[in-house]
Image (cartoon, rainbow, N blue to C red; front, top):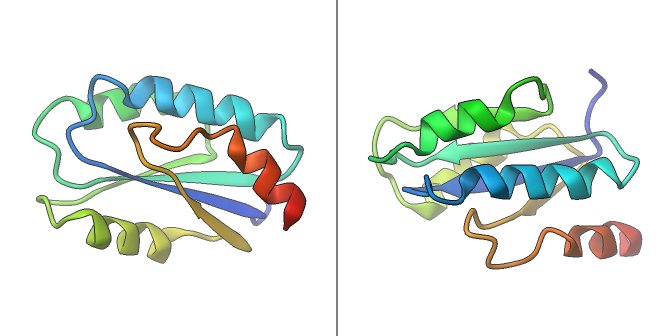
Length: 112
């Protein structure tokens, strides 16, 4: 796989209820951008089924990379872990709970 243009980092903590839909919705947006991308999801020591749901949601998608922290270190540490793994020319951060809609990424990329 070529180096990505965009890396999207998602810190996740106890997001089992919605993480699968977040990944699927984000991939739908990114697939439509026509650029090489990666998604780096950092599980910040979740105690629910977040990790298992991430593994299922990523199935067959090499662009989705997963990082699992050994315990809950907090959102900033999870973001730093994601940034350490990111390979894109640009990085975007998205909350796992879709507080900000992934559809806005298209506008950000166009302006960039």
